[in-house]
Length: 472
Ligand code: ADP
Ligand code: ZN
Ligand code: MG
Image (tube, rainbow, N blue to C red; front, side):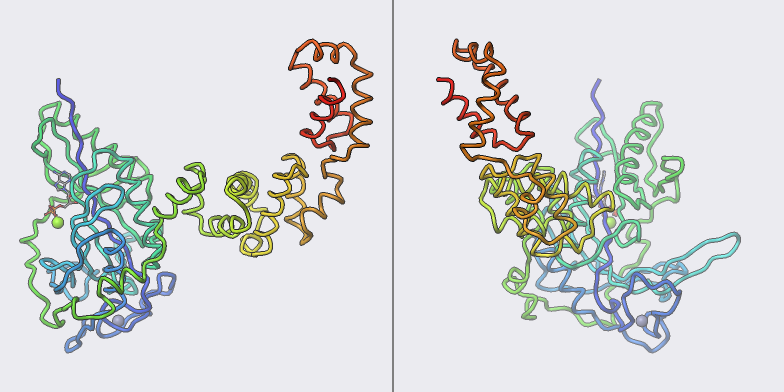
């Protein structure tokens, strides 16, 4: 029997972090709790008002397109998408249809169809028999990215969405918090046993990456079971019920004809190629280091573990701290720095015992680099370094000073080590004889005894040499 092959295409909406709304000068403030304060005659669709295009919103979408290696439109225009719902005051949404700002490009090897710009809808709240509408969100600049149907598993879909979120943050294009509804994912899913696509179902209301994964997995399973029992898959929109961990039918899908798209007569056409700040060169220049570039640098140039690299790319504060500490070390030092941050420091931070202000202080990054160089020079054991680090969180002293005061410095001086060696040798004559007879493991035992005798203060490398020289 042939296996069913799932196919997934994503439609992702993201609010853009501009100062003002898409077509008026109302504030774009996602944190405004009071309803209906950021509204004006334009976004409330009063007669006689005219929209004005937000230049910064266009710029942000073009920047995303540039980062994704897409083709940017030389010409673009807005369209009216007509439908009735209380969350769109005009009775239509200004969107883009035939001339999106961006086409093509890819992210994590998933091809992108298009990215266009539109306005967000109001937020409606249904409680009991009545509904409340907050228009603060109505008219916020909203980017919609559509992928080709080229994804075949749930994990790829959610990792695509995660990477897009990271990109938007790196570009300063949006905060893209899914819990806040700043980024919303819709997944189109079909299954088929042949090379012909099956009927797709659209799943909405996915407000976490986990929901994206679970809903897709659920839907694949549901469709296969339905087909196996001889049912047909209906083209429909389904919602995700977080409580039941299941998708449920919402409505039969509209086709684009139902929206009666037509060019927005109240807005000018955009000759993108004639606007200087929208030129490819200008956009390329304003790109920061991108998340995947930074990740690859960490992995391939510095040799960090993938998990550490990903943590530093994702966690701005930890990544910044790592970069600053690294500036004071060599390649081997960088890997040690990464280990100390991803284990000791991140752990303490996760537990709520370390403030970001400590991590944002350049002096602390430099002190961590000094600590690492003490390990590299054999002045501190890794145990001693960990103990020193604990003190570093609570004082501004240099690691060497701390280690000195705490008696953590490993002793390398001849006189001290000689005494230790003599003591251990006279207490273990048979082990010494074993080593003389060629038993390598015996040396390790003696070094261990020496460390014990010195209460961990001896530098094990130097101690080992001392034993070798004393015995042979
Ligand atoms: P519609 O006209 O219904 O909106 P589109 O062709 O615009 O459909 O595609 C919308 C989304 O659905 C895109 O992300 C696309 O990749 C995805 N898609 C299209 N066909 C399929 C399919 N058979 N299975 C899964 N996803 C699909
Ligand atoms: Zn307004
Ligand atoms: Mg479509």
